[in-house]
Image (cartoon, rainbow, N blue to C red; front, side):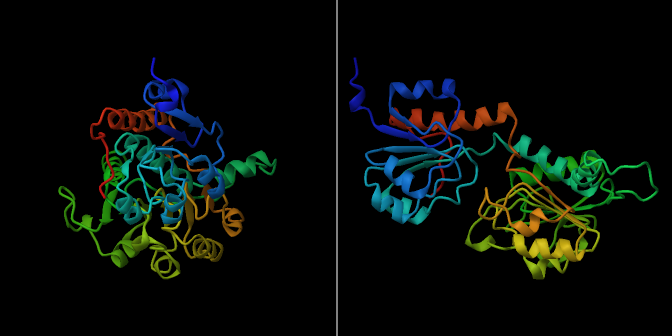
Length: 325
């Protein structure tokens, strides 16, 4: 029998699905933080002592400081598609094996993006709170009149897998005109009068609804701030599915409070799980707790992909979804 103490130690930094983790016990000694709360930076450093690998989410910051404090760490498998929590240069210098979970959450995230758009534009959250509070006294001609979606123009900021799926569904299912801004042209999404690539200022000015799907990084920090919000039409809705920090939350709250734009739907926030208090005070904001990928099949697929990478590494093989560094 294999001595379990001889197996590489693997920290599982969140409560996941035990049945999906079971195959890892053959190759690793699992150290499990079996809770939904993220480990603090200090606790993460402590738990990683002597660990070869980390199975984590987007909450665990793997930076130069952590790597210096955890000399045995050699691999990180994320259950998320985004990996802005990894300091790639420091990871490259260490020679870490890195993986993420692209593809498996595209459908769930795209459909939630459309759900959030519809809920925001049609004031679903605001009107439900009104009804539940007992204030509803009957029908009125302009009560909770929202912004139309069908046939309007959707601007997609970031036309990756998720952005393209949203654009396709909005065009084919809701009859929307779709414009986009992306770092590079995307085949099949041209530059016609009613579709295609636009400069960021033109995208902001021409979109009835803006869907933010870009990954977070130094180049996209506060990509949407006060100057950009000022370029949007007053009837526009902004939806952020990307990462907290792509949108300046305080500037957005100020724009919402002034009526500079009509409404916003946010699934991600700067410094989450903390949320900007000014946003919490905005009745014209629909706020959800980072649940765009939250269908059970999708969340299981995300964990399974991380497990598949770890099992491949244990066999001395490349994992199926490495992060390019």
